[in-house]
Image (cartoon, rainbow, N blue to C red):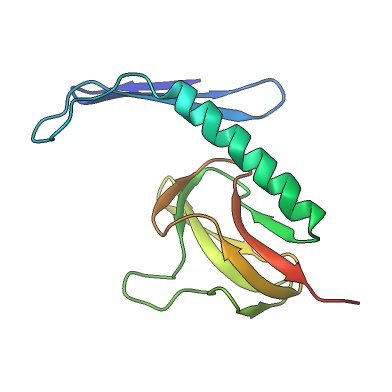
Length: 144
């Protein structure tokens, strides 16, 4: 379990015995913002996770392969700022193709497609936080 509190927010990360991560955030103050903080966002995080789970089930039913993050960190679509993205929707990938980077504790970790096919969806925005095992993108596998 990891807890961090500043003057502006509280963040709590917790790993369960099943090795699943949960995250809860609470904004404590909102200086220079039009609307004040709404409080704990844990219910919103839970709702987001259940919506993502149902979308994942639909994608698997359609035969799409999901590229998931192997660890939590910041998801980057390109090797450095200003560079072209590793892949775009419509890009053809092989199993060993690097499709993204996840930065964890200042270490850049390559994420590989793990499947040959065509990228049909990119699920996270560049520089967005990715939880362990989040779906980063979906690939339509090649017919064998």
